[in-house]
Length: 135
Image: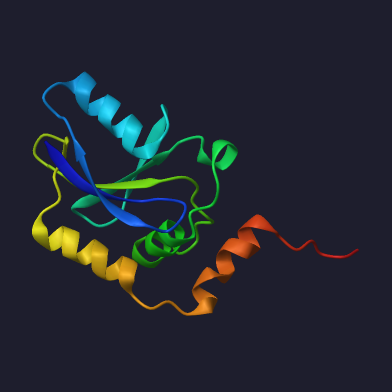
């Protein structure tokens, strides 16, 4: 059983368990956890990946908390992220996803629960509602 965390578009962080007895079971569990059938992987730290809806921009809503978390860790120039984000560990030997370690879980929870300043959300508005230069 893979044990991870997910943050939904409502900003709620929750635990997830995914059956990993077969590749098909793992894929179906990830589909259910993210709420999509096409997904992409984004590096969160050197040992944790975030799986996101590859078509989230078209099929879902902006995930403000996930966007701030990813921007803080890795993607300073990235715009907003859409849909649910699924956090799983990385087994660098096999390249497969693995359960989060207690330390990785604690780090994600700490980042998620950290007090944020309103300015940390400004980049999303700039991404979603770009200002045009007047001619």
